[in-house]
Image (cartoon, rainbow over all chains, first blue to last red; front, side, top):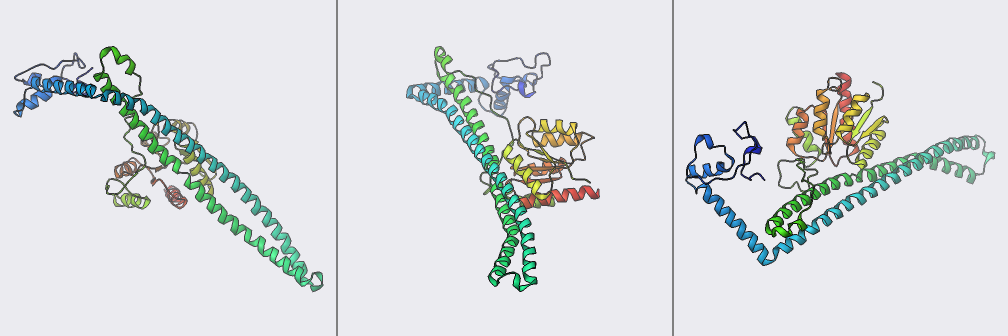
Length: 266
Length: 128
């Protein structure tokens, strides 16, 4: 494994022949310009030049601290707690994934229902329009001659015409409500993105825990802990802003987007 | 222009469906869907689309990469891309504008917002 302090992987290696050659930290009292890019000596060079402790001592101290931490974890029994936590993380991931799946299915069911309701509304509008025009003809017929209908009959015809006249407006209002119900299903996209982010975070935590456990566990028992956890995502995108309060790097709503773009001349 | 043909790009089927239904309500019935940038780019290269409505945070190829690919392709560079996304960071909004996006809508949004942006972009296209 490359040293965490190695610069090779970041592209700073000056040795063209062996750019990814692994180098062990070496104890040095002094550093020369030619050796300044040697992976293990970068921090040491900086430390020495700034009057800090020499590299060898830094590494010795880090190693000692790590050993002490590992011993303490084991002696206090925290290694078992870490193992327990690590075992629970996949379960937490599965539960979150389950929530995302079930809420997604629920949102789809609602959208299906909205589509069906829209079709019913369209049929209702069409039938009402057809009946209204026929009842209007009846109204005209009865209005032309008082003997063609009783006053109560004419009143009923007029009321029926008025009712069919309102159906269009009522179906429009219902369609607007259906649109609102449909728009509310965007929660699946928004919460889904947040859940995906948390799942990725849980994966990263699990990997770190596995690494820590491997280091605190005797070599003969390490096989039990090792697993093939998927690598953590390097996605930079954040998804929905869960809490915008106090943040000036994000916009709170569409008006914020429009203002920002307008201020930049777009 | 005859009725514009839309391509809706989003990894969440719910959101693709919502945008498609909203476009239908606004009066645009000609729309197809893609679940990520890779599929969208292949569809754009295969058939003619007049308008792209794209999410940003997607697997395989995100919205920024799709935008960049569209603008880099001579045959596609004039197709307007409206970003519809939950990404509300100012740097993302500016990056989208600088990358050539025709508009930016932050989720959750309303039908009125989508209609306003789509109509504005179509008018701009018509006068260009």
